[in-house]
Length: 364
Image (tube, rainbow, N blue to C red; front, side, top):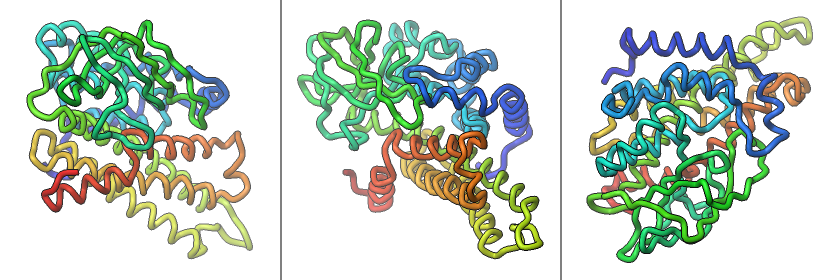
């Protein structure tokens, strides 16, 4: 695929940006920082209304039959405007796992709700800082789950979770309803991510029929989510680059605009390069879905997007000086989101290992 979008894809991006910029602003996002277990309901209602939850899912189960490229475009624009809910990514990951590995009955039961957004999905794979452990913390026996898994994004709100668990014959992927599951809401610096610890105790669950290694299947799901997250990070980095540029050509110091100073103009130029590299990696990764090098491409996109967003968040605040750290201007919202997204679906160390494995032909 070309690294340029076609006319239809550009239309999706343009319309998504128009709708988000018209209906999302920082004044609605700031209060979310001070409460736990809540999210921006306006954004999620809009996602359902616009059909973004159904974008990359099959038409047979209520989806629109498009792909990762188109969903990535939506995530990019959501990143620009700091979407106040993580479910576009987590719901997609759960739905794709069921689409790829679920039985016909499981697809019929779960996919329509996930496609409409009425059912919210979460991914529960990690063990502490390890995004995908060799031996899961959760036990699965006789269609029941037991154990605790910490720091699940969307965990405080989700209706179902895709869980990486230890079965009688090794790791398995299972789907569990969360209605009666204990949840310990985690207070964090970006509470709109709805992070919670999940406590399973004799919880009913259904195993997915994974052909081959459950760990490989789980890694594929993480890679799919990583591509969406990378688009969101790139969108946030792009927005910050533009904010820094606009401020630098209007703010004056010592008789001239601060953008005339090399220390400022060079930072903005470097941000432009990071954003464009991340954008190209995102498009490439999204276009490689289903190919042998998809997971390596997803890891590369994730790494470049994390660097771009982290750098943009830091440099944009510094270019603004003292005003950059105030509550009202809202740049800290991007800093918080950059740090949150940097560790969801695995941190940079995890994805660096994936790149090395892909390049050497070895598996961790």
